[in-house]
Image (cartoon, rainbow over all chains, first blue to last red; front, side, top):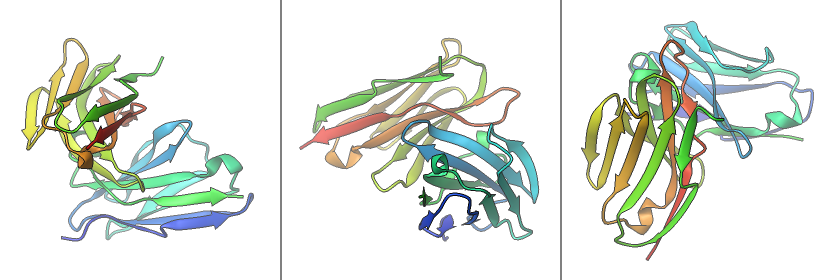
Amino acid sequence: KAGVTQTPRYLIKTRGQQVTLSCSPISGHRSVSWYQQTPGQGLQFLFEYFSETQRNKGNFPGRFSGRQFSNSRSEMNVSTLELGDSALYLCASSSRHPTNEKLFFGSGTQLSVL
Amino acid sequence: KNEVEQSPQNLTAQEGEFITINCSYSVGISALHWLQQHPGGGIVSLFMLSSGKKKHGRLIATINIQEKHSSLHITASHPRDSAVYICAVSPFGNEKLTFGTGTRLTIIP
């Protein structure tokens, strides 16, 4: 069974640009959650999608958004990039609700904003 | 004060030693996760606990819901166990994972 796939692996953008990251969950998993990891703040929850619906959102500005498609693949978008958005963005999939299920993480997308 | 506190922040031990990493949290939770992150970023879920104790190979995780405390133990530690270990909790009524800052474990051969 293929694992969670995140693309791209690395990304370099400049301030003000926007970026879209992609996450393909394990086949059969309907929940995808997104996390931001920085050296200063550690891991933080961004949002969670289940069956194309956003179920939860973390404390991030509206520049951070996401969606989930009918095949459970998910994208997250960050508009008007700021230097502080430089981080490792991780997604995880689970068969049902992520907080009470084992999570399967992708390798992450390392975003650098210059 | 963070909702999830881990100790120690850094731990260096010799191969073969018994390792304990602690996680304390301040809110009621429905589950607690132990995660392992190797250099390069990939995260692996080790355990998901809501009560009691779980064992997988040389790893043991325990949780005491009344004391709001969990421990991760590694027996017969090996250099390949070197990684960052992260505790995360699912608070009741707020189904968003909240993470500890991690424990960096280094096992010396």
